[in-house]
Length: 81
Image (cartoon, rainbow, N blue to C red; front, side, top):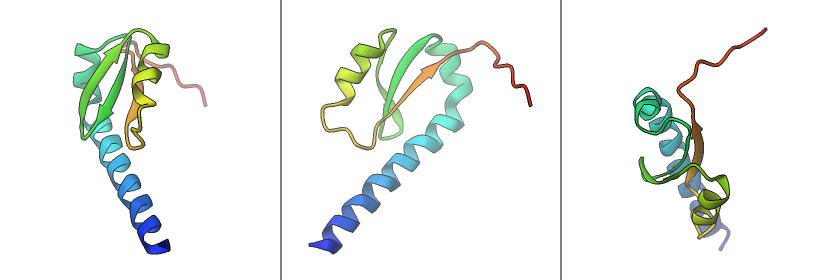
């Protein structure tokens, strides 16, 4: 049973990391198409988008452990170090 649980966790983490890498790779393109939108990323693609955080959370909570929610903003971010 522990092996099965560990394998499931590893699968979830692997898929989550694939989604995260996809987000990083495609962020500039996403800024053009989804500016000021929340996006839901599953299996390395956008499966839902909305301007409402409440709405996107409602969609994600349906058993989507590996999905990523990200707010896309085309405006430059100022960093102060």
